[in-house]
Image (cartoon, rainbow, N blue to C red; front, top):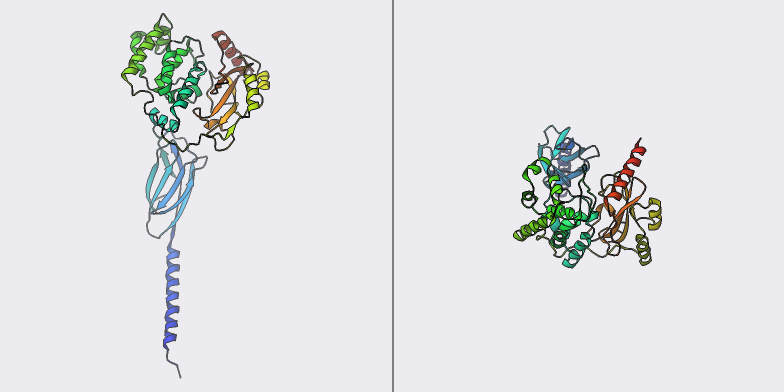
Length: 417
């Protein structure tokens, strides 16, 4: 005789059935999830591939991430609900404008070609505010005066991009609020210095360097300097009309007067927006040279002379803390393309994440270091310094400088054959 279901038996049956139904539904849903796979390449506006682009594929709050390869290619995949999901593909990289593309899972998503546009160059005011934050006025003024003393050691005057990568030029542009008095004073300085620009070279002086730096800091060259020139000459030979004119008579005084008047009429120019507020930057040195080693460096410094044999200079100075790329001088601005190596001696490293000095990311506003340059002729050429006790070193006359250029070019050409 069959037994009727009891209450407890019925409950057990319903529980088992419920579990089975839930399992079937769960398995069914899981089995219907779909995967969207996207491949492509990232290029710039000129068609060159862009490596190391951060790439994110998102649906709502769910995201997967990857980055482009050295060849600019990427492959990214996401598992999502079975519907024709709405997806967003995003691309970010320093120096480029962020880019996002909305996609449907049913779209053709293979071999996409993504073009990133370069980000607009930040203004000098924006860079100045960021770089100077946390620096106090005393430090800024001291550093500006220190850099003005070595104008003949400046290696770049772009008049196109306000920062060039040269330590002297860039520091004075950033500190122009404090450097302005000494730069204006130097406008009449007729001390000879090398013209760092490409051929043809001009007869260059420290006053010209001061003017170029003021122009890159915000002085309006076209309204201050061009009206002083012969318009016909200016149209024909451009900036060389300035060099032809400024080296005659008392024309440097005329330039100085014109600059002073313009600056008085434009007090907002050249650094008034600098931010000296609180900062998270820790100015405590992560490395500081030993006192005895610094004294040895001072003694060696007194013996360095432009044109000295490279081996002797190296022997005097001892082992450097960092060496720039010997082939391309990566991260260092050279003069006239004949300097072949640059070596760093660190006095204080304030901005590095560790005691190791990263010369490509050096901060000329806070770190303390010297850069020693050697030419293709096997000679010591010059030395940059942002250390008061170690003055900058550079050739004092055109004849000496020209002879080093010619000797370096000759030797480097022979080596290339």
